[in-house]
View 1 (cartoon, one colour):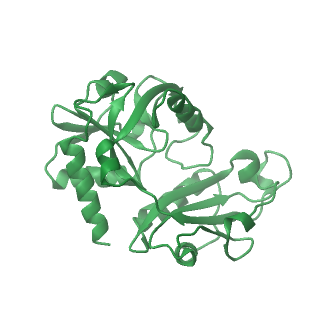
View 2 (tube, rainbow, N blue to C red):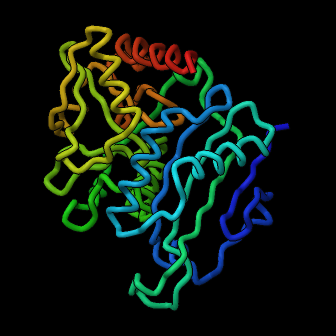
Length: 289
């Protein structure tokens, strides 16, 4: 029976989620003073583990948070937690907070980081779900500018993304696409954005204020191997609205088509051929793990 488990560094073993708790004075709870990674397993092993681990360490260093665990220890916590679920495969989230401190912003008051590893049953769309795709909306919530928080750091400060998604959900859509402070397309609330125009695959460059997604990088590598012309180039909302295909990428779902954008069908309202080729190439890649 699929199950969910949580490893807490303060306890030292996996727990039922109902039993797992952090103190009210933990800075992750109080201030979002934390970093995280979300990934999936395939064949019981974490996918793109080295890339996720490297990004977790970059994010932590970016906010001045020193991780006291070695690479091998972090992998062991993930394997232990996933293994304790009994799931064939899991969605895994690794969260590191700065730890407990007095109720003040000064980060120097926190001395011991808190690690939580969550493993829950993996739920991804079936073939019909991928073919049906998503309803997305370009919202007027902007991505936090790099001058405030470097988008390369995957932190727990997700309220702008939540506000963006709330706007999309209120319109009857599934996902939000945010713009950056100068009006260019940035990324989805939980995803990177790709668009196909005139047979060329486009995705916003990192410099436009996006998270350097791990699946995003994989898609660009696969496009090169499949001789699909691709480039990192700024996209205006009208570019995406006029695209022949639009799809979003994340570490759990992989690439998934946007078949309706702002209430209108994208092309014929079905998963396009480029999206389909890249999705199947990703699936084949998972099959080699």
